[in-house]
Image 1 (cartoon, helix red, strand yellow):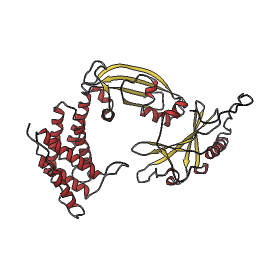
Image 2 (cartoon, rainbow, N blue to C red):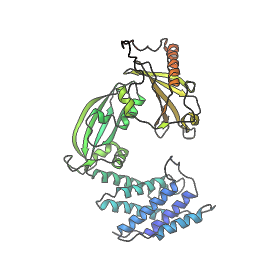
Image 3 (spheres, rainbow, N blue to C red):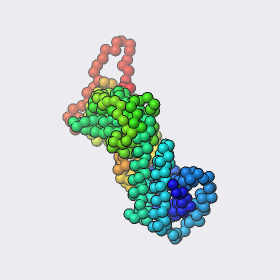
Amino acid sequence: MDKFDVRRVAMGLTAYAIERQNGFERYQPEDSPPWQEQRRFWTDAILQGMERLDGLTPDPKLMEQYDLELEQARGCYFTVPATQQMQKDTIQELRRFVAALETTGDDRRRQVDVVRELLEDMSLHPNWWNGKDNGLDHARNEADRALVRMTAQMPIRFTRIVLGGDAGPHWASGFVSGSVTDEAAVKKMTAYQEAIQKYPEVAEWPALCTVYAGRGLPSALGTVDASDFDLEIMNRTGDSFLKEQGVRWLGGPYQMIVSAAPEKMQTAIQYPLLQGKRPLTADDLDIQERIGAEGGWVTFGLDVLADEETVFGRQLSSEDEDSYIQAYTSRNEHTGQVDDTLDIVVRSPGGDEWFSCALTDEARESLKQKMDAFCLEQYGERLPEPAAQNWGDSTPPQMGPVM
């Protein structure tokens, strides 16, 4: 194999980093390193990887020059962008690098993923690098395909779960780690947790679980549970991953009905807890709808009227990002008590994100009255009171949310 033109790649990636530094930047996700730092990491990893595949010792001067040129270009009104030929040469060398990594037969997927992330970053460049004639789209697709092929050759075991059905309100499929063949394991699936929150009125969910292995292994012997990195690649690929050479069926499908029992829902899902400068009050919440009753719990959808920074400690909704919040809580028909937490979901084009916020005893009591008044106004009936129970002469009833 011809050696990599490492210096040419260093020049191209430096020019690209300068263009992004002095131009428009991507949206920065919360709690992630700045894009400039990530581009430096990608560049350093790629240059070192190329030199090592060539049997050379990485040259630290390449990144020293990278840092120097970015510092000198910072604040300049005018910079010279990479020529289209430099773009083509750089991207072609990245394609050769991905092919060489796959050819080694080792697990070099982390290195391939670095190239994929850099190419993805380039594809979002607002000007030159996302053009049609430099081979970028082809290179990005090749990196994606290499990751999928390499993952299918790993000695891993995993399960494809299909949740829901033609008659249900929700249908989803996805891959999870290990051999999942029972109801308890299905309930840990992210898609299941999202489904029971979105459709709290559904009491039972049909599920199909099929177990597979990679590397063409005929049994689970010699396999390990798929890692988070494995699952990220598989779930990004979707069901077409099952068609990859090396993926082999081990067992199933195992068919079951998963019961969405409220006591399980209350304990299995733990969302990040929000806490503001003051606790929520009933006046901060406006009841919008009664969603449904299931397993002794009546769930309500609520609108949050208070300032989000004040009661949650952070701003969750954003007009710029087209995101908004919805809130839910439930009343237990057996105890008459309102749940001690409020579930908050942030709806956005990029997906939903769930949080929870504690409700004080005072807020819960006031909410119970508001729920009763809402049902009387909307449906002409009050919420049912808990049935009288014989607790004896000295033992009072234990009230509170079912756990």
